[in-house]
Picture 1: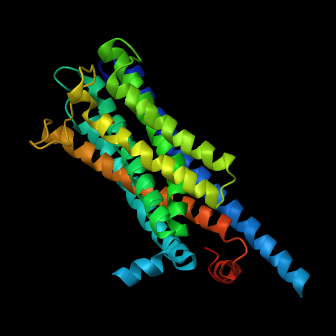
Picture 2 (picture 1 turned 180 degrees about the vertical axis):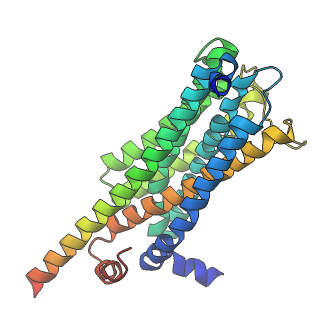
Picture 3 (picture 1 turned 90 degrees about the vertical axis):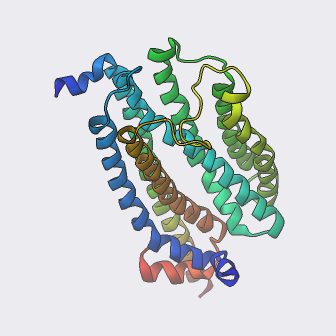
Length: 55
Length: 247
């Protein structure tokens, strides 16, 4: 296991490259989901209040 | 087929399809990613020249591939928007830009991390590296231009033209390693001969590209939905469709 983690002396490079890739991908997925939820809720609230104002 | 495209270009229909499709992209993407990670980190033998250090290829090449794929998609979508004035095409182009910028960033950063042990430097003003950096600036320029012009139809047209003009950078990136003397290695996958990489090393790379591609489309569908919601915020279908499906 420790041999695997050592990556033949390249540990610092291999793991930082993989780590930053994973972090950026996860952030992208979560941020997009959050933006979608927020935008949807905002538009729905806006439409609901307009509907109320018209009726 | 043509009528299907026509139907797909209608925001409510696209929105519904995109919501339904998304989990079918995200979960396979995660499965492919984990399998490719196991293959690339554990199963693949060390490279005879780079030892274990070559394993950066599995995060570098997919990111670089997706950076160029994203740009091509953004430019094509912009072209469709400019020619046929399809709003959804502009939504796709606008949604692609930040995702493409993120993949370009990853390609540059993982490349720099790889460059240090192999070339002895994080950065060099090399044709391949410089043209990829220009790709990042094109994405950022596109995003800032849209913001500056207020994301209306003027922003659509101006940013669309920028995206199309920037396409000249794509062949420059791809052929940079052949046209000029570059410290970057030549292509090992996309060329006429068979790939110059052995099977054990190759399959995790291909699977990782598939994983990145699936992940890209899953993120893209959500982002396009955000664009559609922003543009259609007064349309009645939104309340009708979203309250029913919660989707």
